Structures are given as structure tokens and as C-alpha cells.
Image 1 (cartoon, helix red, strand yellow):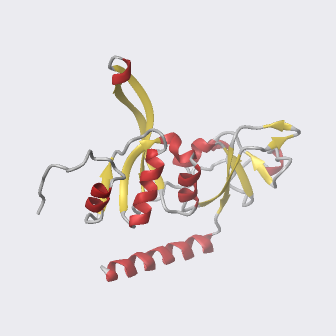
Image 2: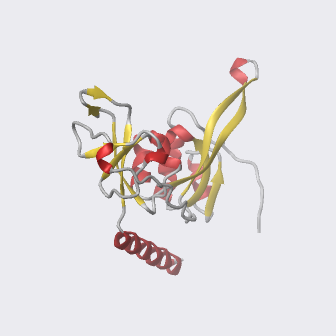
Length: 212
């Protein structure tokens, strides 16, 4: 049965009062504060509590080191993203836009394999300091390549992490001595690896449900 009562504190998402409330729920659905690293800290708290969640946050927070590692370890995925309007009370109530996305650790449908490019791998430029090819646009990710690929960070909400491993985040890559923008390094999973991970996740979730 649902009940409602006033908070004793100020509603700080990281306060003991809110943590205690979250400890009783099955799934956390909310839009925590976006600024000053609060969103990243909130995701870390949900992880520590072992809670399922679906929350709205700033899309760019996926580039934060701790949040990136959650993506890398398969602990979070990103869903629909959109521009959210909000009133900036510090600037006379002027409407601002911020690109936001849904972040979740719930099981989500596969996004499918977006790579439809059959270009010869030899046509892609390679980095000077890592054995990977450079791809500037998601539509140019090759279908016939199983090695490492450097892609813009913006693909994080487009690629299916059931099909690709998120290997690393690099900011110091060069091509022919020329520095390139920040890149995420991805690599296509082989079918056996994908099947093994799927079975492992299902067994783990089944075991957790038995404990409850």
C-alpha cells in the first residue's frame, strides 16, 4: 500500500533519509540533480544500494569517468534522449535547453546492428598510438571488421552494448601526427561471447530473485 508523508530533511538525494527510502523500493524512477557531479554520485549510490533504476540525466554525464566505467562494465545503458526545457531562476526565469537521456540498468531490447557499411577496412585511417581504425560517423562503422574501432563519444546512446564491447576512452590519439578529438574504443563481440554473457546475466538475475 502506498503512503505519503512529509520529509524531515531537505530532500537531498544523497541524504541518509532518502537513502533509507530508496532501500525499500524495487525500482528507482526519478530525475536527480544534474549539476556539480551530483548525477554521477547518485548513480554510484544506486549501484552501491544494488537497486534497479531508470532515471533522467544529462547526456554528457556518460562521458564522466565513473559513469563511463558503468557503461563499460555493463552496469548501465542509455535509452531515449531529447532536449529538455527548464526555467533558469538565476537568470530571470529564462528558458534553457539541456540534452538529456534515460539511464537504466533494467534489461532493455536490443537496439540492433546499425553498422551497414561494407567498405574495405584498408580505406579507414589508423591511429599512430593504438591499433584501431578511426570512424567519424556511426553510419561508417564497418560490418566486416572485428578489431578495435575509435568512435565519437556521442555514439554511446546509439550502439548496442549487447553487440559491442566498450573498451576504453582516449583523449590523446593522433593520426599522422595530427591530434583527433576524444574517442571511445569499441569492438564487436563474437557470437559465442554474446551468448555466454546473456546466459550469465540471466542466471545471475534468477539467483538474485531466489534470494528475495
